[in-house]
Image 1 (cartoon, rainbow, N blue to C red):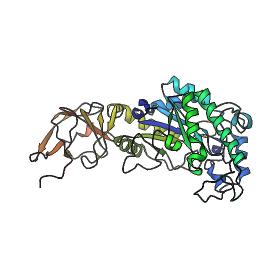
Image 2: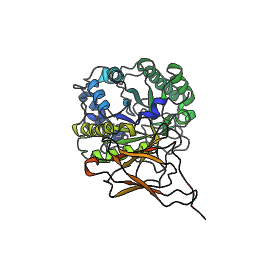
Image 3: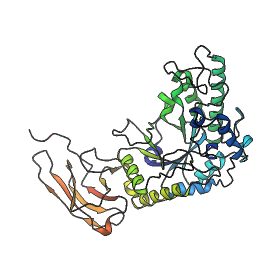
Image 4: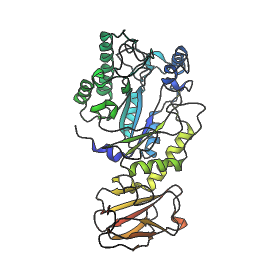
Length: 419
């Protein structure tokens, strides 16, 4: 299937790591896998997971205010605890926690009411399933008993049962919730053949042909998913940067190292300037409430996006490095260039290699027009375009955006100059 066009223009999504790991505030699934907490203590968190203030409409409202066009909820992490009443296995929050109900239906309904696309996270791996640690990746030395069979003890029949369980749960997600996007994880523990990826992709797309799949479906994925750092070179094709607001994916009581709104604006503009989406993660408490510090940052980012929406939605990747000292985007018709300036411009800012004549330059959000002129240039090598710095009243607190209207489609010089 061709890539769904909504994804490229979404620009911002919200990743929601919500599960029993929020009770004690331990690293989701990894804490027992790595021996940070005993397995029995990790699983006792089931008894404290209440979702007592879970309000998916409040989530959807917050995500919409942030400027997001989609969200991705952890339907089932590596710990195998499903957020819906699955018929495949019995480890879910409906039967084994005080929450006592399916938590996905309300989420999908609330997002769709707000016009947001629905994403669900699902891990191929399940470190609690009795049949999971029954085979090994042929080229990985993994001796963790939660993930791999000991050498010489592989059980192909158990592994086949596990894949049937996984496929059954994915089929439930597709048929019951019809997600616009499925965000898989855990793929590194087996090969594509061991995972039966082709069969899984067919199962998903036969049930819901428009489903977008991330790269952790391996050769069947639609887009790349780098994590926690803006790539220096954009991946080929569609992509999405996964980023935490603080240092943790799920809720952790002692993690107060939140990125500032200014830093999030920088991450966001650098990402969309390279043609990607930002998937910004929050970790709700066990009761379902989003921590205030995270909500405030989502709203701060959303306020910046609302002031500069023309430079965000309906745009594509901007200038290559070296043409402007900062990120940029270009309108879909390639006739307007949007320059992002993180620091207040002083005197002038420059654009190099621009062959177009500029019709005018305005400050996005205020409409103030600023002057510009070109100096130098020789034959086919264009001069430098100098744009006057906007006044203090036109400078944005986080990032000022200049809209540069061109006399035609963007035309850049990329040569080495006259010999």
